[in-house]
Image (cartoon, rainbow, N blue to C red):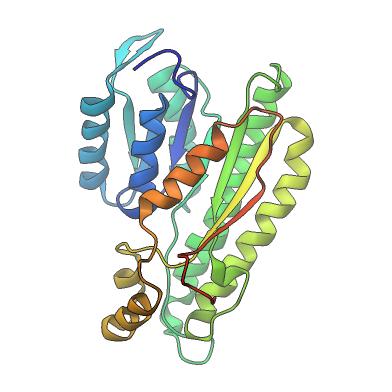
Length: 270
């Protein structure tokens, strides 16, 4: 990996990296030279991804010697112990503080406040809201210390938060999920206003329909959702979102891309 790669001096933490957007983003950032901390519940999936990243993009040289380009921290991204482990892993494995944090882990839920499975509400709220808030709090604290001791204009720091178009334009078929993304929108904007003046960029990414494992895990009706996807085809791929994030985090430190809504060209709503 060339030392001139745009992210060669940076380490990234990506939650929910076992599939979809998280996996695509890990590969994209590694291709740009970043060191990667992978998180997901499925340990075997991120172990495979970590090996793929190192095989494809090479090892990294650290003060502790030559290390694999990716390290894994399996666990629930909403648990404080997992968040602490992710932040510590960058320093322990790479010898540097991670300054590119991506809150990607999340889960969907089919149905509205009237029709969705109430037994799943608390789990979704924990993952989609509390997990993001905890990561912002802990990573933001670390980044404030980091930026206070270096020139922010030559050393960008990023918090990237995955929202959804249904967090901006409510969709009746998934309004319980949508309300969690409304909350994420607010968290991101509040964090941007608080952290931006210290040289920390906070970017909210709001994708529309992305073809991945997400829909199946959310419990959407396969036949009904297939019709929606056919109506808007071709829908987005995880790589489309990863490419957009890669653009954002490689901008000069003085350039702050705050909010990005990404839809398939033919998707009019939500």
